[in-house]
Amino acid sequence: MDLSELTVTETIKGLYQKKFSSVDITRSLFEKIKPLDKKIKAFVTIDSENALKKAEEADEKRKKGDARPFLGVPFTLKDNICTQGLRTTASAKVLENYIPQYDATISKKLKDAGVVILGKTNMDAWAHGSSTETSDFFTTLNPWDLEKLPGGSSGGSAATVAADLTIGSIGTETAGSIRQPASWCGVVGLKPTYGRVSRYGIISMGSSLDSPGPMTKTVEDAALTLPVIAGKDPQDATTSSIKLDDYLVNLKKGVKNLKVGISEEYQKIAEPIVREAVEKALKTIEKLGAIIVPVKLLDPTYSISVYTILQRAEVSANLARYDGIRYGEGREKFGEEAKRRIMLGTYALSAGYYDALYGKAQQIRTLIVEDFKKVFQKIDCIIAPTTPCVALPLGSSKTSPMFGEVQDVLVEPSTIAGLPGITLRCGFVGELPIGIQIIGPQFSEALILKVAYAYEQNTDWHKRKPNII
Amino acid sequence: MADINANLSIPDVKKIAVLANIPLTDEEARKLAGELTQTLHFIEKIKKIDTKDIKPTSHVTGLSNVYRDDQISPSLTQKEALSQAKSTYKGYFKVPAVLKD
Image 1 (tube, chains in turn yellow, purple):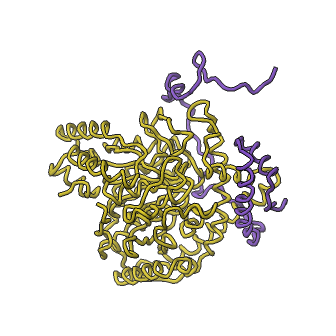
Image 2: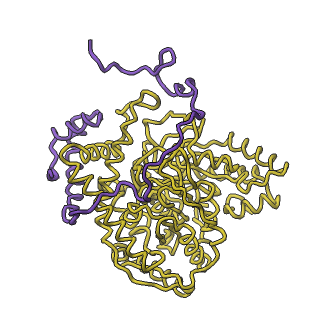
Image 3: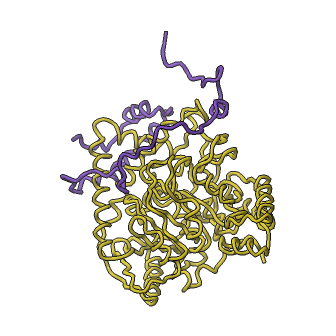
């Protein structure tokens, strides 16, 4: 068996049953990374020496009776997640040589769980984009078709999962940066509720929105991984003390009598072929016992404007700290996209325009929050396309200064309201995967995982692999 | 309430660049004037939404005033804190002068 194809679930089981060692898996992953990453370019930093050392240590510990489930399980991390002693760039020239002196809370949690970090994955610089084309280093290619974009900003993470260059990965989302690349690369992407997972040590983008989360081969893998990184963190005051659910226990309970909302306002934005795939998926979910309820939601296109203002404003504040004095390079090293965002954000927050732009956007944010609250009184979750279309050709992001915001229209409203969402495959256009998302009320990760699992297990989409591997 | 000035000129862009401390070439300023104007025209549509008496939301999960005890906890050593700085002086960060004689 090719060990690189293992899921998190299979890895944990196999390590426990001593079918293979962490060194075996880690070696077979690097054997694959070596030739394939030359084509896909998913990694900014490959940390093979240290990863193999950690895998050896994990195997030793396991021999001595250490039974932590994630001990020796290899993961990749998006390159905006600080890893002590391992270069962390956010794919930005300003941070090209930055070696963090500390671990992000989620890096520490993963290390404490015994996870082996294979390397750091490429992204749009500072997470500003939905293509990886704004990376200051290079563009990652979609493993399903090397002439297509992987999506972004967590495009490198999504590509490593899709191409079996890792067992699992961690991405971050502000609006779409987990779900959109997961959708375009055909992997599972879980964007948790805002505050479910700590932001400490993650290179900030939009601080009222940023949410790290798992990107995995299966829904069960996401359910297994979430509790490893989630929970209250004294270092991030916006994390919630609401107890974590037992995601695994709930996972297999099925969807009988669940009320699933479908909104025409979302459906009509998707291309016909994507829309059809989502409608077909809804029929499957209905057959499994769920009740499909048409609901009316605010037009998501307003969210593009609201999100653009909130995010640009928060970006301009967050990137103000990069002055090249304590670490990193000077402000002249910012790329085009970062400059555009900082400039618009500065304008939106400047005297005279604050009320008309940032203030107004925050008021509409209230309307969006209320809109979801009202709908969730009638239904349990919402199903919608994740992205309007499948992966676009290389170069597409250069067509508009708002490419990312427009691509992410179907995930922006839920992210503005801090809601969790999960995406998984629901079909293909040729070789390119189509994504479907399930959105739930705040802290309903157990519920959306359960719905995603029921659908995944009753379809065969997740079994297909890209031709390149 | 000031209206959105959706047509940014090159001098407008240069003024914002000073506020944002972003060095720009003339060519970049010219390009940005066009791109930022395009984005502002797009987002202008929020004007159409009635938000009279609507409270703004800055935080979505309902937390307020998160406190902790003021206790000493481990932090970076001076050496670690300085390890990424290009220029240091006797255990301090060296910064460009901002005050003139």
